[in-house]
Length: 253
Image (cartoon, rainbow, N blue to C red):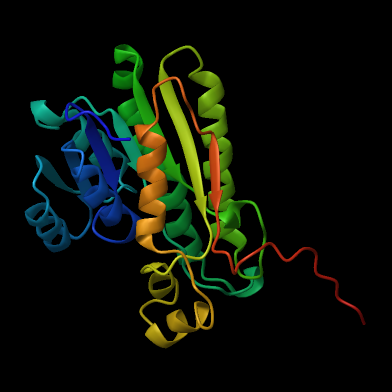
């Protein structure tokens, strides 16, 4: 399955990981791409690699006004966004709640929740007016299964799932699809960011097992987007074969 070359796909967090891998996959269909992230050098390198029309956008999605301005001033050829991939997000720290950094909590809430809301709100009126479109939100299994240290990160991803399901209910009959994709362990820059550049700590997360790759999740993103318009994948949970929910923990004195 592939998308029409008339399709415009807007990807946040496009400079690395799932976002960059998804851009490469969508480019095979010949679509138009809007690549948004904070690192211009990486965006420009990705644009040079892809043989499709690309608009590069330096964007910090935590900035509500900047998001509104970015969508309102897209070049005419890219202005009618058909697919929004809300991919930008992050985890910071693995400390217990009683010892966590409030700045880390704020940044996760501002990026994973508020930034996703701002981008969605900016693109939805056009989709509804055209009676077509697809919002693809990147959640996480952390929003469904708790683990020590996942406090606020898991909470933000639980929001992404519930927000996506509520959008589905509200957009019924308006021709706009909504999907939330919830990956498990993936070997991207995720853990490097979580541990603030500590490569040793990041490497231990995936030691002795085979995690998902950015390309694995990009395949999921592309698949749900390329399905016929009458088919909506509500929620897609994806884990490595060597990861599973471990059940309840019990402390015994």
